[in-house]
Amino acid sequence: MSKDKRPVYRRILLKLSGEALMGVEPYGIDTAVLHAIARQISEVHKMGVQIALVIGGGNIFRGVSAASGGMDRSTADYMGMLATVMNALAMQDALEKSGVPTRVQSAIDMKEVAEPFIRRRALRHLEKGRIVIFAAGTGLPFFTTDTTAALRASEIGAEVLMKATKVDGVYEADPVKNPGAIRFERISFSEVLSRNLRVMDATAISLAREQKMKIMVFNLNVKDNIKKAVLGEPIGTVVEDYSDAR
Image (cartoon, rainbow, N blue to C red; front, side):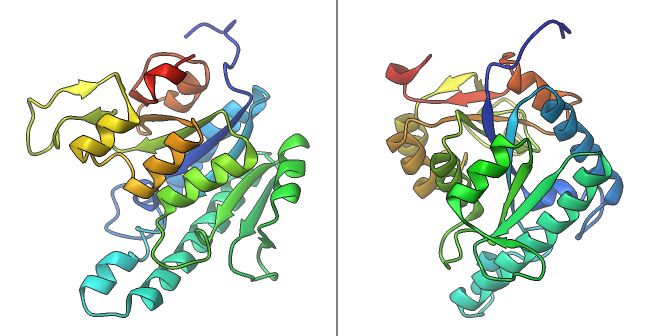
């Protein structure tokens, strides 16, 4: 990776799954993994990129799973939102220990631990070089953190939505169950929806398509992948309408 390369994106939204923070643990947060991710993000921040984060809560509580077990769906989803706040605070702590100023903004009012989500304030934080972590989803049940990521990315004018996962892109089938599955380097929103590919939920994909928001999907566990994505190196899968390709 050339040291002379410059970022091709000025402002990004990075979506992390809650499971990414577990490491090899069965649940919760592996602090070694948390700090490793924070160091990756810190490196990109030092390159002058404005960064917003959305982190899922599946390492602590999954609303959909609880609802399928008989819990009221709205109650389960609100509990899932609280889990994302816990992850956001953990990431804030790790980033600030790496010397990066951050702000957590919550869609549910909890002023003792986080700012309320205010779009103009979030933009000001980004302009001042702070990383903004959006917590508590949209503040409403029945919406995933994927949809939150697409929504917040649109609201802050991010140039790309980066989804860092445990796999290295979008496949035609589950690569764990089907080792021969083909990975797409590039695919359109329409294809993702028509093939019912599990990139993000359909609401998130539809919103990204409407807003012409490019999505990059790549493996978080590969060293320097966040930096490579920001530098425009060909990793993972790019989801965009071909007519909008830049």
